[in-house]
Image (cartoon, rainbow over all chains, first blue to last red; front, side, top):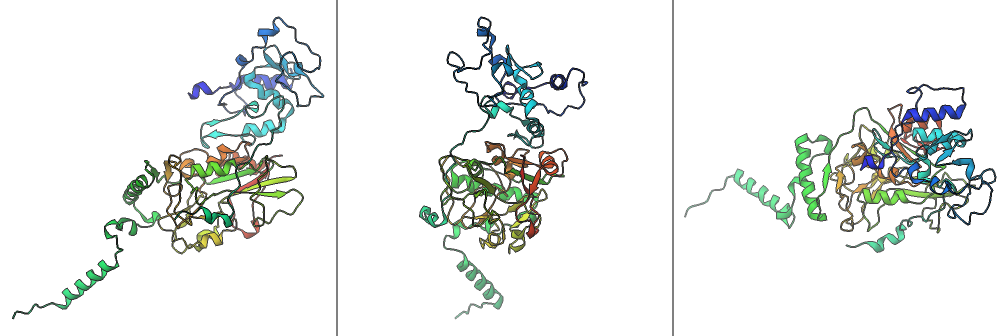
Amino acid sequence: MKAALATTVAAVALLAGMAAAQGPTERVTPGTGDDVPTLLVPHAPSSKNFPCSKCHRHVKPNPEKRALDLAHTSISLRHAEAQRWCLDCHEGDRLRLPNGELVDYERSYVLCGQCHGTVFRDWKVGIHGTRTGAWNGEQYYRVCVSCHDAHQPRFKPIAPKPAPIRPADLGRGFRE
Amino acid sequence: MEKTRVSRRAFTKGLALGLGAAAVPAGAAAFDWEAFLQKRFREMSEEEVARTIRRLERDAARRWKKEIRISAAKAMPGVVFGYGLDLSKCIGCRRCVYACVEENNQSRNPQVQWISVLRFRKDEKWSDLEGAERYYEPPAVPEPGFFYLPVGCQLCEKSPCIKVCPTGATWREPDGIVVVDYNWCIGCRYCMAACPFGARRFNWAEPTIPEGEVNPDTHYLGNRPRPKGVVEKCTLCIHRVRAGRYPACVEACPVGARKFGNLLDPGSEIRYLLDHKRVFRLKEDLNTRPKFFYFFSA
């Protein structure tokens, strides 16, 4: 069950991505300086869930900014939409970093961390985001898109749970 | 005529027995001498703890029609728990309150909740915890112009609530959790008056929990079903954290505002946020040294 839910991300792969993100001249040797713990992510997104090429093999992606009324109609971009459009982050079946490097959906947090560096830093140490599991052992992380919609990352307001009963009304509930 | 001679000794003995019998409550057969004579939790031997727990489990199973497991797990060595709450994240949705109620077998009727979520207007003085709004009920949270401050046990190192207890029924465990021995609490509520944070709750009536909603995974010092007339409080989910798990509120928070860890472990989340974030504690001027830290991640 756990194995089925969890996705283990190799640190080596991340380091390669990080190194690439920082520029082609910088090389990080695998096994050093790794600060992303082994990620156990329930319901992690995967490149297998995004077979973009299924259609886009036949349909050339349209880079124009436009209302999406033919396909992708469920997507409404509210994420610095003035500055970007689909192909700034998507390329083929993978995600595109600002420097052109491609990453899999499994490591989508690398893309998010390109702009949200301080949040990324907090997330790696467990300050940003929800953790479950063991405080002294195996922890379940969520990647950014487990909680945030990548296209509309701001949380929508939710209904609060009922307020507590006022002390004056508490007595009515007594059953003696 | 033969006289029955009664010695002074026999007479006194008989008198004592008679008086003793008269002192026993009417339902003498049902009177639980074992519960009456139960020692303080900290003074019991391992064997006595095991025997007490067997009895409590039996009573709880009868009361709640369900098998209840009561653990007596001890504090882990080298662990002092700390709690962090990110005020820049909290949206005041009260998910933590209800997760806590379900996890810790709080009475649903009359309502007992260990966590109070306070609401403050952003531009107002907000240090008045007692006068804060806790009954807010908007259609959606967060509301613009407000922020929220959940308050539970602040895990004081110098706890005023412990000092005032006349029966020694409440104390601080080595891992920093302030606990209550419900079998020794006499319900005087001195601790509730002493707590500067209003974190303790009293069972004014026999607690009720809907059938099937009783959490059978309990701890002697934590969420085991309580009787009427005792004080209870947040124990950081002692049954969970001593088994290595996160408290229920930490896992329930939909925005990840709640952080938890071992203060003695330099690699823990709680230590990181103490080192890197803007942190404060409530009512620091009282010098109770809480281990509950509020912080701002952004």
